[in-house]
Amino acid sequence: MTKKIILLIIALIFLLSSGISLYFWSKPMESLGYKYFKEGNNLVLQGDKEKNPEKKIENYKKALEIYKTSMKESSDINIKKNYEITERKIKEQKQQKQQNQNKKQQNKNENKNEKNKENQKNNKSNQKQNEKQENRKEQELKAILKRLEGNEKETFKNNEKMVNLKNNSNTSENRW
Image 1: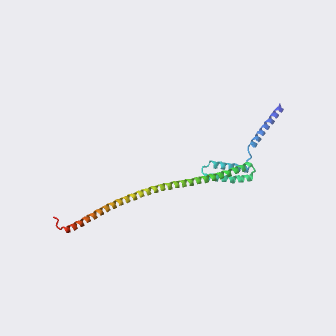
Image 2: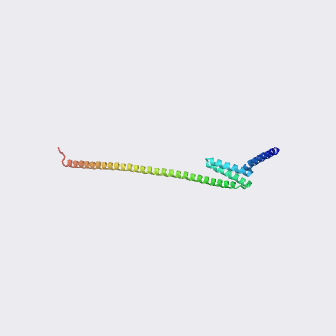
Image 3: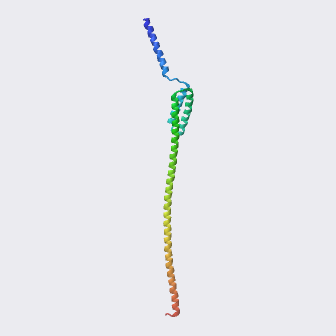
């Protein structure tokens, strides 16, 4: 019976020690490099959540610096992979920023082109209106000139009649 108790105690001690060692071995070793690695990952996640592209890039660059120090402390290949992924994210953000700037510039240019087209249309319509007004003025002037010519002709005829009357009156002084 004492042997059974001793075996039972030994089995319990073995189970406890294996459970404790399993607990410690399942938990990754938290070296300084691993701490930096986790910190870099957190910065990348913050950058991913960020809406402002400038702040995203800023977080990614901080993460790169931390990954560099982590690579000095540890030779884990995951650190290098995350470093490369973060570099790609920075390049993508810069490209996206450039594309957005190009789109804004294109929109500005398109707006300017549209305004120029509208101005050209307005200029054309203004020119047409000016031409119509000039044509009306010319027609009015022509009509006035015709009337004046008609008046001059009538005046000339009246003058001729008057001259003829005077000449006739001189020949026959007393008409009555």
